[in-house]
Image 1 (spheres, rainbow, N blue to C red):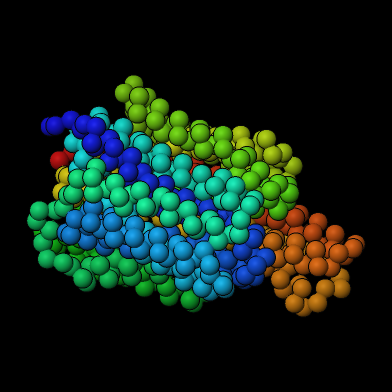
Image 2 (cartoon, rainbow, N blue to C red):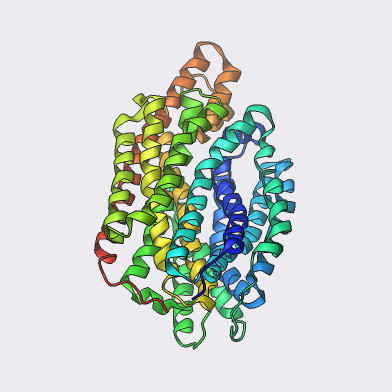
Length: 500
């Protein structure tokens, strides 16, 4: 096999622009939420949807887009996605209402789904030698995880000086170099024998993911009801039909037989839970730092900088460590560190100082960097190069579902706990009470309008209720990471899937 040269490594640098952009967009909104809440005044449910619609659409379309890239060319689809993403980002930046911003986030999800499967599948084809590919995947995974952590930092710097819409305009300076350099350094690749386009399987894959994730979000915000049960049932039925259809096909949209290998299945689930832990912590940590501790967006972003650096170092260092230690040992150890970070957050609650919060985030970031690098390597090593698009789509679908669940589950727990613990002072109007009960940002806005003793009482009550929610959410996060550790210990000790 030919070793990758300077052109391939330059191509990897170009692909990282897309990786950074999509992952930054997953979290950059976290620090802009207080500003968006004050200006556009979305409800709690709309606010969660503004955050979650982007990764939800990404998750639903990644497998179909991965298959499309295998057919028409992964580099071609990358360029299409980059162009569309840049245009819609500008529209999002100047959205006049919460509903318009939500629509733009959906559009970003569509074009983001066109971008992401192409990056990992192109890497699979550009780096044929396993050792080089593992390093390339480590850089890719580090870029993905670091982008998620960089998002709040970039957002904080921009929000310190500009309107909240500036966080979406990041796409333009990142995507213009990609559109120019990708045709030069990135080699086109596609599946030489893709078979007929399977539209029913595409529709079933969307009907599987979207209703199930919606049901989880709905339960987190409104509790278990007939809507949640119906959506979950629809998704599970579509999933059952999809698996039956795929098992009957010689060249399926997604090779579900790969899930028969414990290491592959474990890696996908670990990928999902790792991202859930990262995004979930960022969701409530960013609001806690700004709205409770009172730091500016820039200060809050810089507080997380050590964690970002730790994640990058861990992702690269694990490539060397895996030569001496098993993947099972490294992943379970890294995730144990992440679980300890959640436990520390739950134990400290409102009394954790800012410096300790930075250490907590750093500990979690190290574990995520290790787990993401190794899980993606296992997933890609399981398939031949011409099926790289489908395999990378599985990995990235797990990532995006994890991002959705991070805000849906932990954000929903936080919202429910906030509402349950909020003790409103007497004398508020129905409108003021309603806005204060929706979100912490809404409560603080009402407190500023009220002023005086009543406003101070409302602000103190809202911050206390939010901190109670943070403790509960952090405890739930610790349990979810513990589940990921169990999967690593149980499934990664099995023989790895054969590299074909």
